[in-house]
Image (cartoon, rainbow, N blue to C red):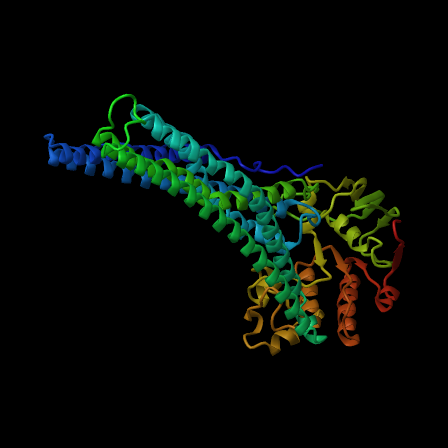
Length: 548
């Protein structure tokens, strides 16, 4: 079943659509007001040349009034467009966060770095697209056509010049756009890869330091950053090239009309108008309007690379949406624990990427301890995640007492469970919060898991702040803190994933002692492990083989 997403790429909420529509209309209206201002300027200058009477003060007030209206429209357009852009970006970001926090299993789209990059810096590339490219496209659809109609009223020659030079710009932009889109796509992918590399290396930073791989990590980052720099410069080169050629075409168009107007007013050219000599007003008005005929095209070309970047990001969003992922069972609500009366696995199977894992039928009674063993890749961790409701089985069922595990009772089931992951995960808060999440710490649990001696060595005790990687704690100390977290609420069931992996003998024995003490008090333990010391002291063992 595919995860239901909040909104497809390119859509806006009703308020966002309204802001986008109003902002675009106001941006077009602001540009059209210049045509009236140009008429005022042309009237005043023509009167000075011909000696006709005109009220300078009235014209000045009209020009200033129109300028005020134009400025107000431009400001309002930017406000509406900014609101629409913010609405869309926030909606897409909320969709990303919601789906990632309510989906089971890893995303095939990429790692945590790629998702984080997409939700932050990549989505921000949509802002200039919405603020600049979309209104520029609306202006191109309206303003040049209005100016072309005015030019045709006064002169067929000016109309021909605009008709010849104007379409060359969109044609060139389309040609450049193909290369720009490809370059932008490569740059966006490179950003995600660099973020994934950074996240992976930070997660393994302590291990990398221990094995002396610092220089190799630096070399990897240097190579990745140089590759991203080359991709970015390729995008900028295309953007500068398109702007340069556009300026050439627009300059030639303005120059040709200026030459024709000048020679017509001097009487050297008698053709180009509709059978009557070109008047000073018409000539000046055409000169004032010609740059504005090209300006929307120039704005569109300047924002063309914004469109290329936005298209690349929207393609990534479509790729992320196409990932077939199961929704996480439950809603993550805080509910009363589900009483544990035994666990039954029946005909359980899970499709993992390109192979199917089938599990033996199991019955686990309260107070039992079960070791899940087998070679790496046999599905031990997946089995724990299935039992916890973090993955949904392809077939079969998991029964807790008399009820089948489902979205309706998954939150209550997890509330009765403790979890000890293989990789230690921390919040950037105090040690106390990382164990009890705001609750007072259980002193018996601290002693049983040998965390009390760790707290005694910290400068600020259990209020010592930890980073997301458990800064200040060794690997063994971090694992003991994970065990204390799993046992903090005295759960009825504890799931432990490789609880003693990569630990020295003494620390591993501390972890084993803590787990067995929990079982001795009536707790139910299910541990995925390779450790023969832990396996030998568990009541039962089930061995998984590849695929079965």
